[in-house]
Length: 302
Image 1 (tube, rainbow, N blue to C red):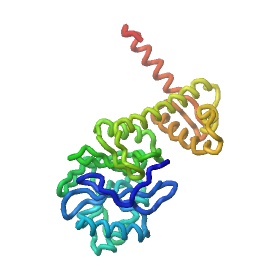
Image 2 (tube, rainbow, N blue to C red):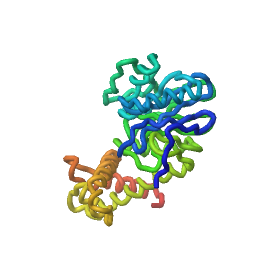
Image 3 (spheres, one colour):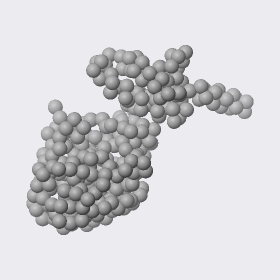
Image 4 (cartoon, rainbow, N blue to C red):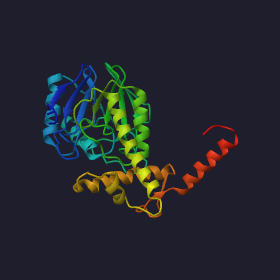
């Protein structure tokens, strides 16, 4: 049974979690928004959905309880359940807060009526009393996604890159895997996710995410090798690789397989003429064979 999250919780000396009051299949118990710092003005990370009076009331009473205000707002990515509450917060508190995020390269950012964005780059540093937050651009879930390291505590705000108690939706698996590798190098002690409970075993969880994806990828690559005589759809692969999984989740499994195939295509390990039917990439096989020949010709062992 999933841990029931309280609407307000002091997670540490520097961090308070305030639930976004927007539960749903994609948001779990709601978007986690975080107040960071120890001073009278604190940084708010993410804002939940638009049009949620319950959240605005909760945020207001939480700030009153702590006797603090908002210094500025950081948005981890453009999805509505993270940026949607910005205008409502500005209206509620009568202030045009500074809103920072990474600019989306191709997807238009959600327009703001009450304030405007201040776009930041990878490694940007936010400071407030008692806390230093460093930005790490981590595409995969979305192209503009950022995670934030609370440097004083070694805590990672993961946004939707890693969720508590659930897997996340991915736009680009190739970029996502690189992001997971980079997060592991940060060696966070704890993860505060965009949805779900706190993750205490941070590095173990990141490793699990990586290993799970790599295991699935190896199965897909092996399928393409074993069935190289013809083209295959993602659903063809699902029926072998996800054998034993109930049919009602096959469509979702096919979406995951497609993400892997697109990643493998970028790496020249899979090929498709139409994005629907796939084979093992012949150019990749030629490259491997040529590489082995060149190594062998130099007298190196294979």
